[in-house]
Length: 460
Image 1 (tube, one colour):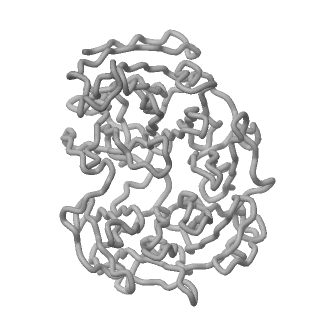
Image 2: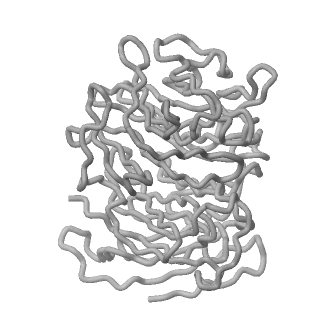
Image 3: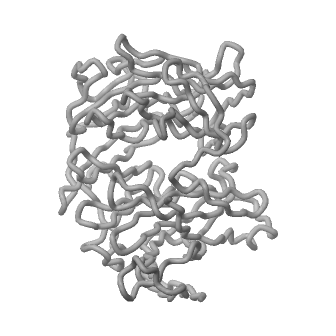
């Protein structure tokens, strides 16, 4: 059953639409009156003029997807898990450019409140949250968090703290000259966790900014983070792999337990690998854990022959050990500013099904190849052809030629729960360095409107 999106006449308005989804008879294990969601469900059409990330979370009763709709409005759709009905609201924020940094992220706090942030790149914070669980209309109200240092924000990320409360980080400033802000939601308001930046905005007289991984809760109860520094907006000025850990995001230490003074600078940070500028270090580093719970950092740099290789740094009993895990011949040398099309990607190591594995995409190996590493040497032990990841990448969907298909798992309410749903969407590749795209009438009539699909995962 289709529904028509009503145009907005004023920026401050929001739109609410519903659709009743035809479903088969209710399953025997569902409550009376509930209809099982179909395996695939078209939720809306999303704008895909460039490659963007969307957010999705699952509460006890509904699934929420944050995205840009076909008219470029920042929107949230709510799918009722019992009835299959779809509701949609538009926020007072519209994506007016082509900047692939303007991703959308969402989170669910301990009270079941949905939080959303997005549509920003060195611009004022765009943030909304519900006033009570499942109150979709209240998401249309944009508000600050703490209100300080929020006029030039980028890279908002939600994460979970040790006590289960919700954290938010973002960069204040710009590439090559920015600071990291960390806040905590106490159930009613946000508060700044630090009275200064975690990472310094300068190395002596030279401005810098850090590009951190996600803040990852490890099996040891610490929150771990790794990062690279950048000297200016050009990606080739990335340098150094660094690491720190914390119990509360306020007091930080290195891997030996030595307290780190804040802000952390290139001079006082724990140096994992001294990678120089211009050595193929991209800021897509990842942080994972091996079989024994030891932190492992995945990153790219050139080998002695100038080829791009995947390296791993692991914190062992006598310090960080650096190992080259691949022996590729391909060279990827990202340069310049703006959004860089990613030619080599990886998701970080994880111990799963008795194996140390990592999902990698690289021109020589292909897309979404699972590498199985030797636990001792971190070299490739095997390439797994049919490894089953318990997430969205098992979904098969055909995208139009020359477009990019994105798939993301819907984050479940329980932090330890495996996802039961995923979302897929289509966009053009981020190959214009954030500049307007030349219109191609054969691609979605130049509106770049593509179906946004909810998928029910096979969680056997």
